[in-house]
Length: 223
Image (cartoon, rainbow, N blue to C red):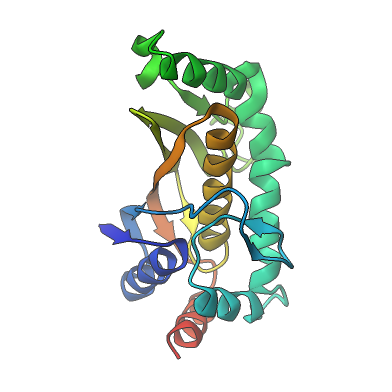
């Protein structure tokens, strides 16, 4: 199933509608055509979001929504941005010098060198040889992490980002995940001299943490 929107918030709303309708979806592809508007505009001062392309009316509705566990939408956005930019996902994609390699290669590709590497700019979030990630030890969930891969795709002077998720909660985590990926794309573009392109997020299974919360959230966003 496919969602194609101009900004991050509209893409999230359309994807949430689909997951609520079907309860779960195998392979939900979200394409945000313009995830970044620029490198320095303050979009959300409270959450320190800069340059990301949001529908602020919908965004503020999500932020103020209170889930049944007492956490707000604002809490979930902060959590997901922190996980990718400072937390376990950041540690994973920078492990083995992956993200440094991507940035060095992107700079060389802009100089028309090492163009053969343009389809090899991937960061994996897990090592299948790590015994802690062995599928025989099911008590060590999740195995592997929900985010499995980020893939940077240069197209002339534009950089696109593709993310792959083995599974993703669309009521709680998906919106913050989209925002965090957009911030990552913005930062890498700023560091390497590219213009931000499209953001594509692929959930191999799109699910809900709490169906009642998801329905109430959808109703709130559409009100």
